[in-house]
Amino acid sequence: MEIQILNKEIRNKSLERMKKRSPEELATSWYQDDLLYSGKGKTIFIILPTPGCSWALGDAGGCTMCSYISDCTLEPIESFQIIELFKREFQKYGVEKETAVKIFASGSFLNPKEVPADARNEILKYLAKNSLITEIIVESRPEYIKEDVLEEIFSIIKNKLFEISIGLESSNDFTREEKINKGFSKEDFESGIAIIKKMKAKHDVKSKAYILIKPILTSEKEAITEAVETARYCENIGVDRVSFCPATIHKGTLIDQMWRLGSYQPPWIWSAIEIINIVRKEIAIPSLMDTSGFGSRRGPYNCKKCNKDLKHEIISSNLDQSLIENYECSCKNLWLADINSSNLNMSKTKTKHLPLI
Ligand code: SF4
Ligand SMILES: [Zn+2]
Image 1 (spheres, protein in one colour):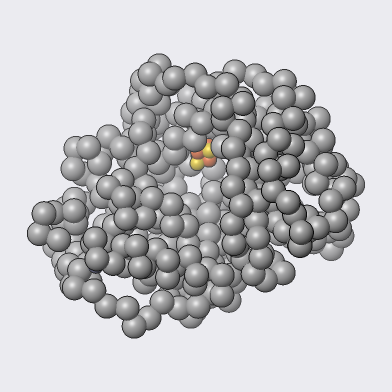
Image 2 (cartoon, rainbow, N blue to C red):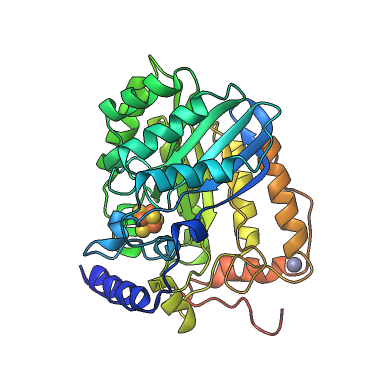
């Protein structure tokens, strides 16, 4: 596919320029309020050092918006080092009440080429010993979700909750394949979800889908419609919850190139709010909205007056799953103009960030 050739070229150039960092530098963590399956609580987020996402390192060059590869070593890491760094980060936090742990592998936690099985199992054994860690969340592409691997995981973590987050991005095949270059089909995604659903009879296993808001070559209006449709699809096939990721511009990606050429702008924060309000009214499963990069030049943006307020409103609405209504700002009219007229000339270039705002 044309997009894969272009994507791979961009990826290779960015990998050539990439400054190598050691596993010690790459491992990091933070602790924050979060919505757990048990309700409002705290989560420890830990980024594991890994060699890099196999999909991004392969011939197709990975997904068009993702630069996680720049947070990886690109070379093998010894399992003992991954385990030690995980413990180093975990021990920074005093866990006093029920807490979740989210492990980010900048790719697929369940792919043994990215996180070796012995490192994965040691990390889970370490968490299994702590009765206050009640929920463990990891990310994986669907092809690595396998019954035997999940059985092995539950033989270690027993009755703790284990959630697998999958970057579906869009239920629209054309968008997922041609605009995002995701490299898996809806059938692949549904097979992963089917395994998780089957295992629910024995284990506390959950699924989450990440939904990308506004891939390249998508108008503001299409971005809203597709995100809502994707959440509806997820509910219909039995995904436990969804997490929306409004696009931000990461260096060394195709989306970055298009943004530099003026052919792409990240979504409005108003669009994120519109999606939350529709989804929380019409769809029964919990929905989260990521606010990374909000209000920055490379992220979702409204105007200087309301960016920060709305980011905080979204963060707090994630915790109680509320709607965001009755907030007004003059920039909303510009967003509405974008929504109502961006298809008139079929241009994908957005009017936002103009000095008028
Ligand atoms: S979004 Fe996930 S699958 Fe795609 S390149 Fe990034 S880490 Fe790999
Ligand atoms: Zn505003």
